[in-house]
Image (tube, rainbow, N blue to C red):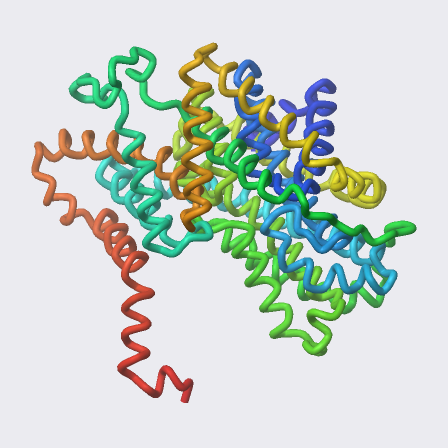
Length: 498
């Protein structure tokens, strides 16, 4: 109870509250701008939080995460262009409602669903993260190594590419993590004579490059795209009839989103799709979906916002990012010298609970920002890209240089941006690369510690029950879908559903 109260008191500084409100507004603007998303916004702001104290810095990043996820619904409803991929399913019913002159009703439902879903997920985060951390407190290096391997295997299912391409991108990220001194032997690897690389490739310039600069290059190909906005008078709170129709959907999707968010490497996009499909499955009027169903908006928005809180559970409790944006936040924790995992809830409990309270606070702010500011924020979608993206590029260069005042970091950011652009052009997702870079250092460190602990007898890892369990889950994650398809092809009863 004391850490819970201490975390709340840490946020009571008036200056920090103003900062969080400003971050909420900034996150909404980022989420409302087509092409920008929570991951890009967090990556661009990451270097500017380095000089802050840890609590304000990470609180701002998590606020951007939550606010940008919510704001994707604004453009999805008004211009049929999701601000974030997590709001893609909101377009299916939000835009038809807007075309019927009910944009205010659609945005009101999105706001309330997002708020409820976010609050439920943060409550689950407060309960689940300490329990998971306590369960993992007795993990030894072999268990951590196997857990990290399992986290890397989950990269097959994240991003827009095929599983094989995602694994290749993740492996490239792990390869980048080997640059610099070996932690055990102090031998320098792949530094090519640059002393700045002896400590490895920094997370910040790579994140800026693959998320910010690569997106700039992608958007440069879409300069001719024009968007048409639906006019809206005012946002309306859902009616009593609307609440009676959607309350089960909101609760169901909040549970789905929280669970999906907890799974390593999944995220709000997957959660919104499943939440939307389940809303249609359980609806009494499924034929309305795709034509302007309030239940469709509620199912999508409650799920994608609750996934944000769920994604922070493995991020804080195990050090395994639960989503792309959580990977950026994990990088921020490491830059500030904080080690996510079980010790965070024993040695830095005040910090962990301050993050929980910050996420709860920003979800409450959604009600005011969404109801009173959505119409204003929707106008930022018409900022000419010829103005927007040069500003983003400037932030990227300044952010890359700001951390260590090193031009090498600027070159790394530019190089990562070009690599990220070509990866996207050829069907490779950049998200596995980012997570692979973060987990690669953990993987090498835990492997070295495990070999020392087991006196170089690596096969003894398979005699430890938890380690064996994580290895089994890794094999299942990598080969399970293939084996299931093979099983369905051999068993006609399964393939025909009889």
